[in-house]
Image (tube, rainbow, N blue to C red; front, side):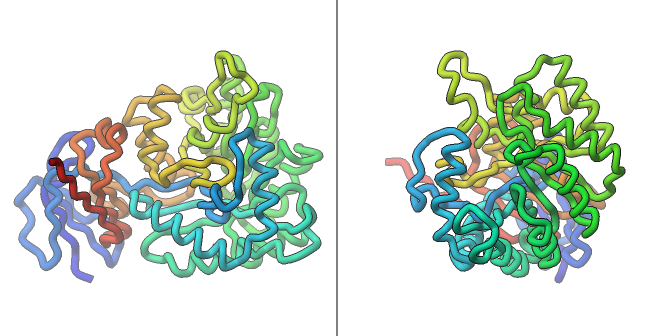
Length: 406
């Protein structure tokens, strides 16, 4: 494919530049002041657009996406959401997951996402893993992954609670990228963490755990994980998602735990949208924020990402599949600066996913998002629906808006 020339793009530092993208290498090869590059066969005028690194979605549940109305879920806390999903999951088929997940990925891509890590349940019919096809959700997402190459990169983490070893080995042999879990819902959290690391290591797969998804300050998944990783020298990437209880402890304790996490090389994914919705319902007065201690983690040097989590399913009836919405919530609820919040859904998210850096600079991966905006704060605050999305130097999505006033 011929190079793609982007003219007149405004960068986050305020400068206006022309960029040359090479679809063959997938990299940004030139970033220069306007007018210095000769005309090419493929050009796009980005005057009026802010050019950003393309976001990555580090934590999705594509197998559950778009089921809020179908499942007939009622607003509630995490146990209520789990019960509603389990009741509906008995009716979920492979084709159902494939089509809903595809629609959700299209929404994510249109909003700028070029890489997604999704968790997938081992679907059961009776609460056990011995009936039906527990891997039907995984099979659907593996099919979808094969169709998305070149547009959206999809990583798949198998989410389980005390599933048999044999089933986890089968899931990883089928092609899942990571092993997940929920230690705080396990009968033995410490044993669950150890087993997950052991099985993942046998397959050279990464680990991404739902950790401490509670405001209980006594929850200890994150500390268990950090210590187990350091003791066993786990080499593949390790991620802890949610970590809500870290935001409920005293600052000194949060700082100590954050240092342990940094020393273990664990990335943390904050999930403000769903955690703010589910957590704190038992505290109607001075309701605590269901959000991890983002500032303490950043201060300790932890790789911090932020994700959207659920897209209109029993765990959250809203969600626009938009990382800029996630970043906006980090500004509002997490008290991050706009640039810090943007980093969490772009460079921070890619780092947690183990992907090379992307963005509007020479030598970076040409995964880019052009938003009709002037500044980062405008892009986060105004939602800015007009967007162009580039993956590997190719235009993969364009959203235009017509407004009429009478």
